Image 1 (cartoon, rainbow, N blue to C red):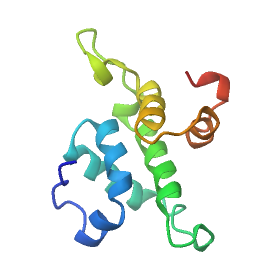
Image 2: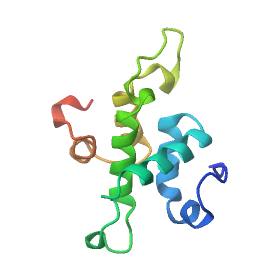
Image 3: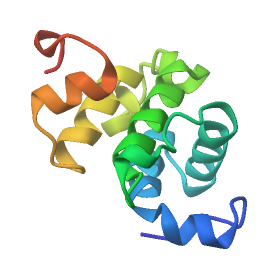
Length: 121
């Protein structure tokens, strides 16, 4: 995976690189991923809790997904000429990314996206 630009501090790039990969797919670029994670960190501190232990990645992944789904990109309708992931709505792109890239099951995806399992394809 190409390293995101230095929008985030170096320690964060190393610490949360597992979260930057799905963020890159969701946002469509490494710059967009850096912005998405930075926005998540600025808005949502729920990912940082002691109960998660030394690995905040699962909670940060959930916060990134919620930030993406609430963003204009996550809520937008793809243009008719789009192809691949760009042709999917934000919710569908998120479900596909979590399933194929993160290897999560339908129940885990539904929990992260805060949607009923039947709504996840």
